Amino acid sequence: MSRFNLNPEQIARELSEFNQQLLDSYHTLQQIDEINVGQTPHEIIYSEDKLQLLHYQAIKTPGRKRCTTPVLICYALVNRPYMVDLDQERSFVRRLLELGIDVYLIDWGYPDAADRYLDLDDYINGYLNNCVDQVISHSGKPETNLLGICQGGSFSLCYTALYPEKIRNLVTTVTPVDFQTPDNMLSHLAQQIDVDLAVDTYGNIPGAMLNDAYNALMPMRLGLQKNLNIPRQLKDQASAMNFLRMEKWIYDSPDQAGEAFREFITTFFKGNGFINGDAIIGERSVDLKQITQPLLNVFGSSDHLVPPSASRALNGLTASQDYQEYEVPSGHIGVFVSGQSQQKVAPMIADWLKLHDKSAAKTPKK
Image 1 (tube, rainbow, N blue to C red):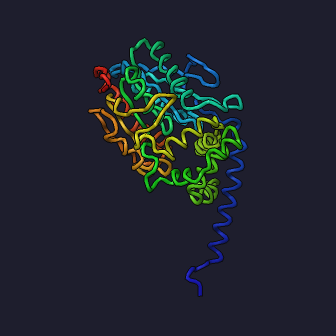
Image 2 (tube, helix red, strand yellow; image 1 turned 180 degrees about the vertical axis):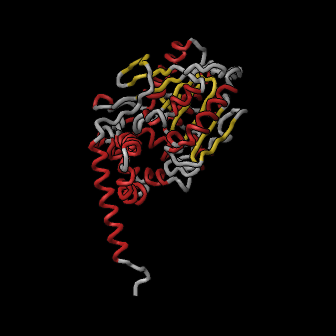
Image 3 (cartoon, rainbow, N blue to C red; image 1 turned 90 degrees about the vertical axis):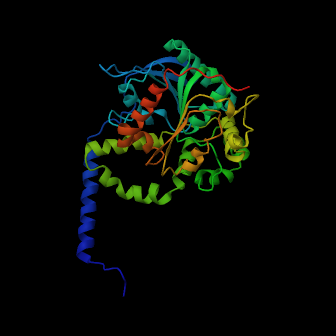
């Protein structure tokens, strides 16, 4: 006899409830015309090729201290940067503005066939360096704060090591540093990639293919369980919009410039360039000991893409005498879109930037 007590009436009731949820979700979807994201007011102050540099003006609040040095957010090449500005209730950017931080954000755009041969030298010594110069010019400040997210955090570490005189404070968030920790599922997958074959075959790496690879890391949670929960997510318009905005972001995956993808996988996932100290961008070696700025390292305790061990490895690799870690009880994206992000993470980062706003620029070691 089965150990499961299958009550036919209970099964019929649950199927009926599920069917009603499907009908309700269908009616909810009929009421939605457009899925708006990235709605915080901003201006485009610089464009180069596919890239745009966005500026968000800090919100003036009587009695609230403002940070005199702006922050430039460097996002990853994967997915779109509006993840930090999904909607007014879940906008990391808007929360920083409310807390008195002037924000600039790099939108890398959508690479096409013309960008096939862009490499990390183009992205870091070219685009990122130009954006930093534009922020400094536009803000009238001698330096900028730099906040890197995921792969953008790795870029920010490289950039700060190469151009320390332009960065006042560095914040890394959900940033991979040790790319070969035993609990890094993405790293185990990357080790199996014949990156030369992939780039030579595709040219640019299709964003949809990368997205499928990320989902495959947690097939039950990101596949079956998620799909079964969709009717509940679409029960009313408010919850449906929250769900659909996130889905739009997840599947809005730009293709990756082939050479940059090849170089990032080779230098970091396969070569573990930060840990081994042999990362080279263009013709310049990346020496993390050139980073003497105050450094805040933020990561998620249940991040399956960049586990805490991969981020914590940054401790001791730089020459910063003011290194601080902040662990968020969330996953990779929850660091920015969860309620806790609005209530604790953004305020903590804003307070840290204000605390270090008047610190003297430090001279890099020779």
